[in-house]
Length: 318
Image (cartoon, rainbow, N blue to C red; front, top):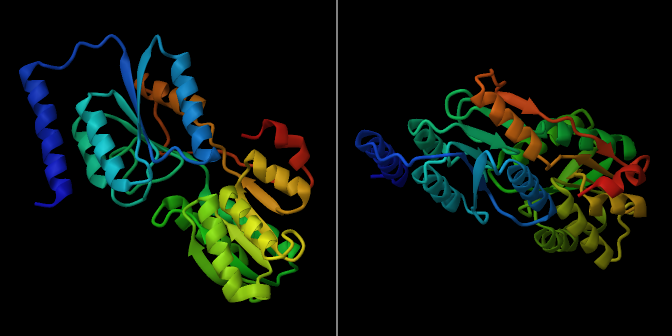
């Protein structure tokens, strides 16, 4: 029998057994479970801290449990199983991949545990497999970088694209948005695309290899997040190329190190992707428990940072 069927059957049977035997634990507070995909890198750490800080403010009302999938979809699957077994009242889920977690969402639904997707989407139907998705419009983010680069390069660039986690909704959508933006400009060409898994160190290694293969053909880099952009910038500098002059670089996230790179002239643009979900997701959960109708998608408004405004916002960046 496939693993996900065994898992789903196990959870349904376990939950049913609790209900039939009257062995549900006596609770004085609701339990909030948070399944984080990983806790590496400034953006992900800022997101974790925001949710933990908001939980701490509400500790008289809620108990808080957090799991860390350590970048593994299989572990996140098991983490959700654990949260269900521990009878949490709600699950905040930052999915590692778009596909692969449907059986876990089905199991949560069977246990009558509402799920809120945070910052990445997962396969399923809002209102059925999960309550709502809270996050940014990733397609718009990619499109805004593409529009900026098209204007900055006068519609002519040979672009290296560094993509995020393979199979994640954010990587898929940021790639699509960027391509949509450059589609009508035949001289805007992507000459290399490779994943660096949202990692600065991986991006530096990947970019070093691409520079060896493509060399001076490269005139622009589009990175799906700031960490990869910063890794690419280091690789360009190590190769004797000048980021911001020889090669334009654009990315997404709006972290402090990226805004500092913009101020130095090495990074051209960073479209914000706000990681501070704590206040929003707790407020949305409380509205749900109060019986209010929750929209299927709650989209954050993101800013664009470039040389005109980076100095104004660098101190408040994470």
